Image (cartoon, rainbow, N blue to C red; front, side, top):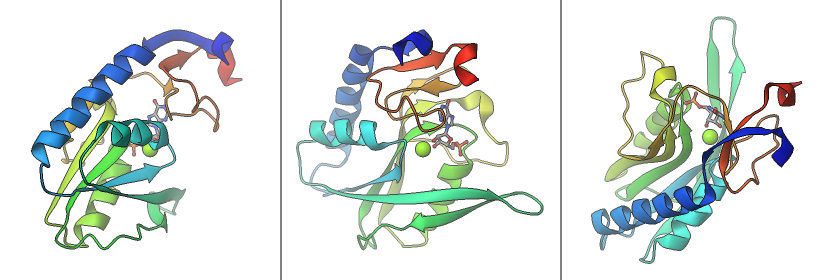
Amino acid sequence: MKENIKEVLLSKEQIQEKVKELAQQLMQDYKDKDPVFIGVLKGVVVFFGDMVKNYSAPCQIDFMWISSYEGTQSKHMEVKHDISADIRGRHVVILEDIFDTGNSLDFVFKHLQAKEPASLKICTLLDKPERRNPDVTLQADYVGFTIPNVFAVGYGLDYNEHYRNLPYVGVLKPEAYM
Ligand code: IMP
Ligand code: MG
């Protein structure tokens, strides 16, 4: 696996330090609010686990799984697995691995907003603003790192379902795509 990495974008230490900061910030902002953290599978699992371990106050967790498919005109998204918690009137934070075109987060945000939470915010480890779909006006409330327009793997992010288990975020060598 390691031999296919061209460059380490974010080291394990950098990520762990940032996760602690983000969790601290959330603990201040959600003090006594018993928030519900919702993860979008599967890319978020590594970040999610580290975040909740660093969040040492009452909270709940839940997950959803979405998939996209090519329609006749454009890409469509559907909910493969919905959350099980009742979030009406609750303070909800969506945790994501990466905010890229923003199409997934936009879909997830609208889907959860329809369930009438008291508040709904977004916390993403990575933000790749150069790739944003101009129709997406949504913004992340908490961002770990802003990265350039490169395809990243590791710390939950995959290429063909591999590399999710790397403890850092890296860029693949061109030959690794073959
Ligand atoms: P979106 O383009 O913002 O809708 O992001 C969709 C999904 O694409 C993300 O949740 C990731 O799972 C995946 N993705 C986007 N950029 C990358 C990347 O650089 N590496 C690996 N997966 C990515
Ligand atoms: Mg994802």
